[in-house]
Amino acid sequence: IEYVNKTYDRIEKYDKTINAFITVRNKNEVIKEVKDNILKGGKLAGVLIAIKDNISTKGIRTTCASKMLEDYIPPYDATVIEKLKREGAVILGKTNMDEFAMGSTTETSYFGPTRNPWDLERTPGGSSGGSGAALAAGYVELALGSDTGGSIRAPAAYTATFGLKPSYGTVSRFGLVAYANSLEQIGPMAKNAEDLGFLYTIIAGPDDRDATTIDFKPNENIVEEKIEKIKIGILNDILELSDKPIVLTIKNIINKLASEGAIIEDTRLGYAEYALPAYYIIAMSEASSNLARYDGVRYGYSRYMEGNWREVYAKNRGEGFGIEVKRRILLGSFILSAGYYEEFYIKALKVRNLIKKSLDELFKKYDILISPTMPILPPKIGEVVNDPVKMYAMDLNTVIANLAAIPALSMPAGFYNNLPIGLQLMGKYLSDMKLIGISSYIE
Ligand code: GLN
Image (cartoon, rainbow, N blue to C red; front, side):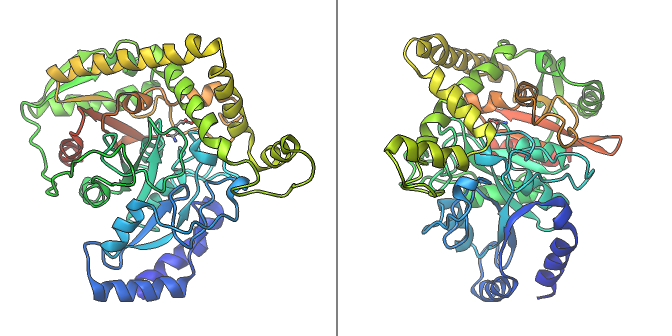
């Protein structure tokens, strides 16, 4: 009871400013559940967890930070939520995010921006910024996010926490509100490598309700990897595009690892400049198709029923979606339209393939690839959100892993002027636990 009370006091005191949560559950209900679950047992018995608000929670409103779903209460739990509940975890609340996970700063939310607990003038990154901020603000020790093109790793980097974008297909997407299905995974966020791995092993595994999951369950032992003789490739074409304080911080870590016996080489991804356009073409195309279901009739915001179908759709969608979501629906529909499909979409798929092949080659030589997680320091609130191209450019380093389906982890690398900097580790497909083990060593 003391633990839950302290948590609620903290939220009461700080969250009006930080705005990490869209929904916090009723305290008495949570206390009851904590007590019951401690009696029942489980690996997370009575542990509070924060969940990104695009993951379906039975009986708890799931808004995707959109006016479109402001009042939507799912009648079912996502698979990951079922798994957490089975182990006794207790959902504390639903965290703020960019609307439908479209953004890199948690500023496109209908519920207002989340502020970075390390510097309230700045963003915590996004789109899972509420989950990152909830960890950094000390509300919880564990959180879930989703990562389509960096949305777990950006907030992990900017809040000095740990986040994993798992290998595609290792975590069920059943109950995750879709943005771009071929790219995204739900993943763990935590304050250290051990907790990160622990949470990953609980949520991972095959699921009949998501045909893209594979028959694979990660090893439950989180072993700290020895760094001696580990072969590390530095992705210089990415490093070069990052701000100076970030490059210096990452180089410090590299030097330290080299002095401890790691074998480190400079290398390049190749096609680095094409990754971002390819990602946005694919993500927007899938988004425009996924978001067609919000037609004002079946789901969510449904204020207008007068007139013909076109008027009904246009009015409800016009009011229900924010500007960034509309931009992506328009661009995605354009990209998929006759004539442009070959010119943009097919080309983007070819780039995706080239990047995959390049990574396959690199992983023949290296155990892991290192780069900064983000190319710039956490932006000030308002700095990038109105300049979409600038905002998209922040995802340069993170989208690669989503295009290639490989695991990628962000961990704290250091600070510059009190601002957190993240280190990104990428590994070959299904090497998630190895990445966690290496991050545990570096930590
Ligand atoms: N910033 C990227 C985008 O807006 C990634 C978002 C995400 O991973 N959900 O698409």
